[in-house]
Image 1 (cartoon, rainbow, N blue to C red):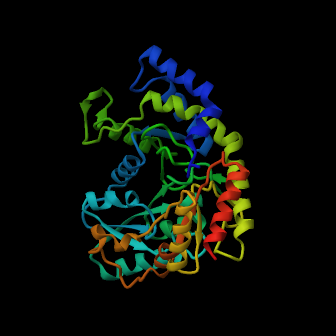
Image 2 (image 1 turned 60 degrees about the horizontal axis):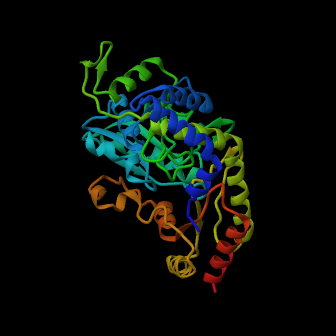
Image 3 (image 1 turned 90 degrees about the horizontal axis):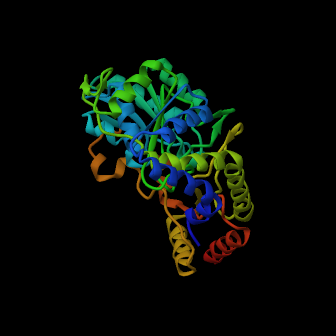
Length: 376
């Protein structure tokens, strides 16, 4: 059994994936190419955005978003305390300060209340300039964008949506990737839309931001091309082979994979109701279930269940074991009195089970049985 079964997905999409890869090899268009252009158009349409700029990976997408936002030394960037380091890593790189915020008790996404509290604390201290907010759609679940948008507008902050785990999810009828001045996503193989290596994308509705991102992706190129360097940029491009793989995967995601993920989550929810804290999806939202995360009663119970799953050969993961403020690299960042009770509690009790659209019912039942046995 696989935690995420990429082999099963490949077998389902093998004919089209193989044909696309063969086309790339035959044409020898490896950097850029027709598949990259087509993919950018389809990704933008899927999310309902005007522009999509593909790049080398999701971390680069975030770094470029920070560059567009103009994040620099003396700035404060606000981010949820429970996420992967790439969400706020660029702040450290550019000399800014990461100001972490607690998560909500139910969706585990950025808490609007904690966000505003932290913004006000930074303003009251007067040492840092509030610059940007990174809203992370964690575990495939979208943030509360009505509340977060309003806070960003109130304080004049640049909103970046980190949709690395939520491509295919939606918030009140809008696809994730459609929020913020810039949204980013990752095509790491384990993501809801994953390639066969690294890949990422940036989304925006602003023509000027689109132009700037495309320049930054290719060494700060100007109108004259890659030897007309008008700013400092990076080297971050999605190759044509990865685009060739992603196109049939994107089609399958929209056609049936999102729905299949809902069925897997529904069976899990029914089996574990009353025994664990099961995932919550807010009204009007659709999770893409990048991970299926349960909360045990305690760390000890969580660890006992995980131990039993390992003995039974059931793959499992913990997303994430350590909140950001407790990582060694961020221990000197200011907390402004925030103790992050929800993030600390989540990280102490969470564990995730196999989740993908090709998980067979009999495989899922094996997972369920093993989890429940681990409770005894």
